[in-house]
Length: 229
Ligand code: ATP
Image (cartoon, rainbow, N blue to C red):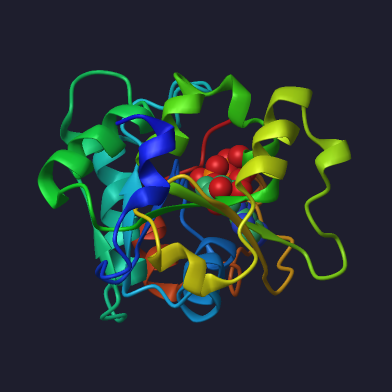
């Protein structure tokens, strides 16, 4: 789908679907708040969580993809707006977001607004993603950032700054006027939690409680995950 065509869609589009990919190694409250606040700020109908199978941007995670998927299922189970997409985990090939978006476009049609949710750190690295420009033809991108620290074009690589300037949307309602192609930012509660920090705590036999859901922590303990360096 050419990028220029995406803004010519009719205003009668169905409600935007958030797509939230990540390694989730393990899933934690930073991820959950990002998805929850995206629903609220961007008026999303729902969020589809898409754990990466073989993440191309980083080393092999310490636990299996099925275990990361199981933890995301546990973490999201109580929220009726959240669903989990296992396709990347089940695929035997490396996970590229552009392939996932192509698959979802094929399944959901050309008119449904898709909104790829990313943190500001992930967005700053977008030009390193496989076929990154095509992502913007397939979905909108919504970037979460800390209160008081808006996404600044000056802090982005030149190519991305240009796209940011050209495609920027200023209201959640704009996500409904096209199926793809916009970039919107939203503030979210700052939770300085990372999966890296949680893995380190667990490796050091320290408490990771209250950084992630109890059900996920129970799963980690039951399966003796993240104990080895
Ligand atoms: P790691 O520490 O292993 O790199 P992570 O905690 O950053 O992992 P990812 O699975 O890599 O988690 O992140 C998935 C998405 O969630 C990314 O878009 C990232 O920007 C976002 N994200 C991660 N942690 C937070 C957080 N604490 N607050 C907001 N967004 C977050």
